[in-house]
Amino acid sequence: MRITRVYTKSGDAGETSLVDGSRVSKSDARVTAYGEVDELNSWIGVVRVGLNDDQLDQALEKIQNELFIVGADLASPMTIEVPRIHEEQILQLENLIDLLLEELEPLREFILPGGSEAAAFLHIARTVARRAERHVVSLAAEAEINSQAIIYLNRMSDLLFVMARIANKRAGVKDISANFSARGTKS
Image 1 (cartoon, rainbow, N blue to C red):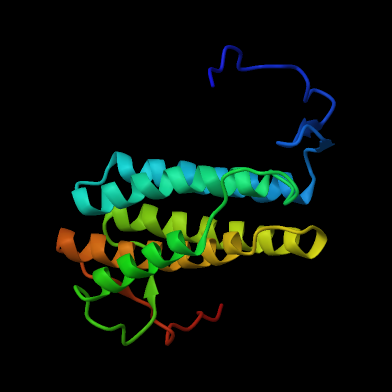
Image 2: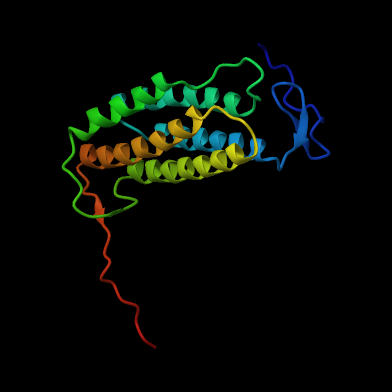
């Protein structure tokens, strides 16, 4: 497929087309869900710009391509044939999580997002993945969708959390422990 025009003007009245050609409001739950996945993909692109880790970068590039599949999956009613996320991709995420966890000490406390720049951006991507997952769950309450998309996004946020910890470790930066004992000051 070749994209020859960026603008079509067909969405100027607040509607867009789904993959099957049907028109829906741009505020439709389906559009919101795949829009959140698109934002997640963009944040992963931001992560990759400053990442100096070939293993994580290659994994994230693969994930970006899979997120296009998730977006197409969510933009397509189940009655039409498009590429869809399958259990195999979820198992690959789980295998990567397990592999990366072997390099980390077990968590003994909650950690704050941050540390290295790469870890901070991975944490942003993680929270966007969680938000995307919530919107896909909302969509599933309204329409039939591929349930594997929800599971994929759930694992994705887990993986991004682990990647943030790995990015800190490999950069020689300690995770930041959450401090629950902090008290507000009285005025």
